[in-house]
Length: 238
Image (cartoon, rainbow, N blue to C red):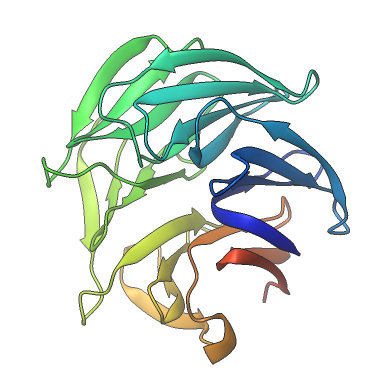
């Protein structure tokens, strides 16, 4: 499966793979459960990360360059709302059926489903935005910056932080249904952390796919989808 350049990626309730393509055409690409291309949606601003709003056929995208959040309607196949979110460029995004979580400089900003500001949660590094965000089923919030993976509770209390022994760059992350965290580590593959934040193992370290930027799972967590930027690969999850 080839694309333009993908960091942001997710899977919807029908196990369709949704990719945020941020180089060249500035678009969302949608593939079915058998990895067949279905359609694309043009975006107004170059996308960075993408999340779906549960129970609705809607999504939200942060931008690589602009401080905006784009709302996408997958039924109408178009961007239908754009809201300004200060310092959100290259910030991660995640969503529940009540809130949207956006990585902004020094914070995770919480919005309602219309994009209206609710509150911000500060985290350790005030100079950078969490550039990818994921949620688990208990409400914990996980994020990565260039060197740090963090887990915080919904009230903002820190659960743990993790950096690799070599202080490698970190990219997108995903949490499985058992609370294990998978993070793309620059040129080293996918690291898996236990629910307490300690290192468990390297689940993908094939030299051919060592430069991984994006990761997500299908709904049953039987497939792992990895992006190397210009190439997306699907693996059976063990």
